[in-house]
Image (cartoon, rainbow, N blue to C red):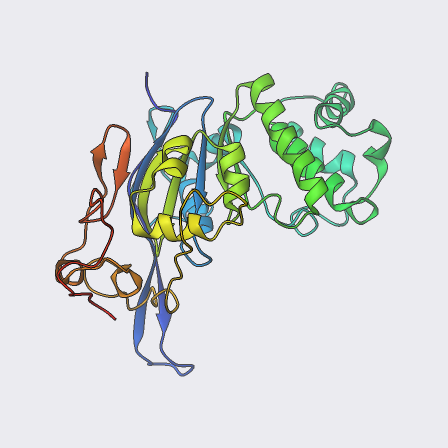
Length: 332
């Protein structure tokens, strides 16, 4: 079966200056640096990593909200270019982190949801009201709020309006970019359950971006772990949590609060992530990695399939000891 979304060696680089003055030295920030993955119809792919790992830039680039520096994105078998952006807006939508700033403050809820319906000719002036009412009911809102402005709604209600707007064009793919992180814990669970319910009813495909590993575990069929613009591990949710192969993934999972540690000790990463404008040689994670060998500072590992369905970018992914080799730990 063909993949709904296929991303091949996608890169997004930004030019930056080292100073405030004209003529200062230019640097290249490699926000997304050669990412490849696929997503099947009806699947939820979770995307996790530290702040600055490139998660949001990746999803913005593959949706052509930012133009890629290089690489290819295939949606439903069609190679995307700048010319296909209008077509893509029908097929893929995004729900942003902050429901307050992502909704037009001077438009009523009715207008916010009706606008994409009219632009894409999915409803006319006579049928649009009925369609807006259906969408509001679909996301658990009463139709009486249609005449309200976003500032008159709670955070959870605003996010439901954002979801209704995304669903208005009947997309195949919905990207949720930290879509519950700005909400209270009780409201988060309601929105997550709404996402799951909508997926079952409409056969939606999700890319779920979050820094909360518990949220991603609950939502995702597979999880991709990002570090400094690259995917370092990709596996099913069950396998990733049961037996992470990347040292970075193990460190992330060890930080998740749990009353059942299963013998796992907390792994504390030393230092901050490197500057994406000046990444270290070899493996980008090696200055912070407890099992780094001299090879790690010399040669960048490629994301490859170490076990069936288990993709890892690490020279020693199957090392059962997970300890520094021969006393040589580079970058420490």
